[in-house]
Amino acid sequence: MTEVRAFYATKKDANDQDVEMFRADIQTTLLAHLPGKAVEVVNALADYEERFAQFGTWEGWQLDVGTGFRYHDRQPRYHMFIVTDREIGRATAAILQHAMEMRKPVLFFEVGTRALHLVRGVSTVDSDDWKGGWRVYT
Image: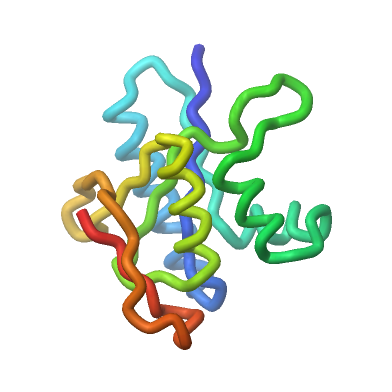
C-alpha cells in the first residue's frame, strides 16, 4: 500500500482539540479521495516539536518541511500540504512556497464542507504581522 504523508499547517497557538478534530477530518477526507493509500496527516506543531531543534533556525526547519526527504527511504517527508485558514503566518507561508516550488500539492481544506481546494499561491498582506500577514488564494 502506498503511503501519503500530509503536513497540516496549524497556527502555533491553535486550540489542541480543534487541531486534532480538523486533523482527523482532513485524514478522513483524504482517505476518501485517495482509495488504496495509507494516509498520515501530521500537524505543524507535532513536526515542529520533533524536528525544529535539528535545524536550529526557522528557515532551516521551513525548508526541510517543504522540500525534505526521509533519511531511511529517501521518500519526501511530506507529499502534500494542507491549511484550514486563509490567513497564515510567515513560517507557514515559507513552507507552502517551498512546497509549491517543488510542485507538491498545497490544499485549502474548507472545514464546514470538507471540500479541498488547490492553493494557487500565497500573497503578502502585511509582512510586519508574522502570525497572519500572508494569505493563500485558491
